[in-house]
Image (cartoon, rainbow, N blue to C red; front, side, top):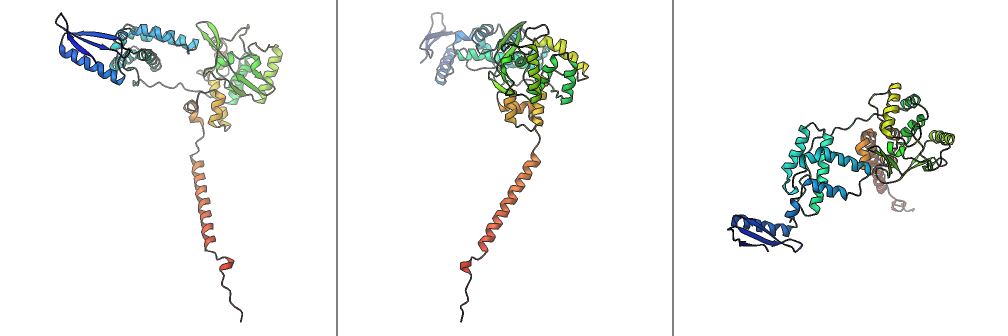
Length: 382
């Protein structure tokens, strides 16, 4: 239990033991304030909501260093993006604030100030997400009672418009791009691999005999440094190759004498393919030359593959596996609008089920009313 004693200076001191058994003290000028604090301390301890006042005085900047230092699950590219968002959008607003001083109104003001400063909705979401992760670290350490960045209502992020090519447009794009990148265009449009997965693809991952590509590695450009790592979802997957693409890849690999551990698609002068440079110097000029929409991105070839699969009556689970999504929810959220509406088909099936059930019931009823041979009366012969 917390107890209160008078101090020599005429104030009041609350002494108590924290949940770890450490004795603590806090001074007040008025006894009423000391009494209120003592009650709050005991209530928080009972509820498991007690927080360390010393840690609550640690600033967001210090907790950010603690969080980032122990975020071992982050990929290098993600870590770099987080660090940039921290420096540009979180630290200027929250860096000097003690975490114990932050509440939900303060976090709402933080989001509003970012918007007022011209930050887009996606930037606001990214900054609040990082603030939430930092404050989560402080919460786990007992510095704060709750995470004030949880559940904030933020501006809606507009979805980037997807562009889907037809098979004819894919061929036009492949024909407009300098060789050997025509094979790269077809590969992207008919396998759905991400740009980093294509850049990190090694010849040993191509099983041309079985017509399958194993997706196990991804290439990222982090501040000019190329880093090979796992796929976005950390999972390997196998994507079937259409026969035409398998044949084209066989000629492509054989003609370049690519060793098993060598990269399949490389820069013009050799070496790993830097996606940003490739997109700007090679892909975009080919888009213009082919007369395709100016806003077409390389990533839209992945969307095109998904559209091809759905148009080929692939079910959502098959699309999920081929695209390497982490869950079927991601597939539905991204491509749900492409799946054909089946309301009329389902309604017709329900009608057929009911009709078949009614007919079966009538047949059973008629059978029950029909007399059996044993029940027919026999007229005696005289």
